[in-house]
Image (tube, rainbow, N blue to C red; front, side, top):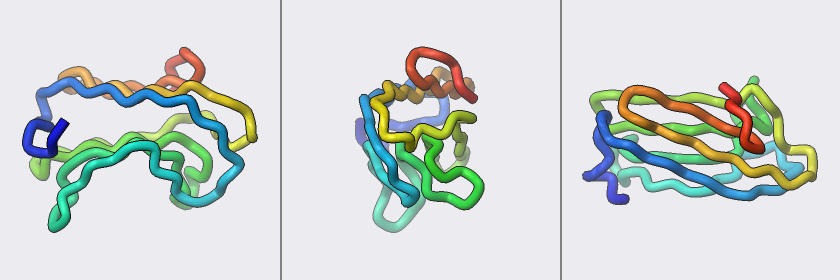
Length: 100
């Protein structure tokens, strides 16, 4: 999906199997404009207060969503993580369970 097609009303899903013990940002998938923050990022967070949580960031410059899972997943085990944006609703899942 191109950044130009990522509008606030659109739907978007990112999904991955991940295994990490890291404490710094680990990008799973992203596309962000070079001169703007417009785009998306699905990552393992290294942000203070959210280390090891899944971060789902979406922005079309007019609207921005930045949310994290409640679960810390940097325990060295495999986890299936999913971020879903459906209209104005954003959901995160860890191992098939809603987690935000």
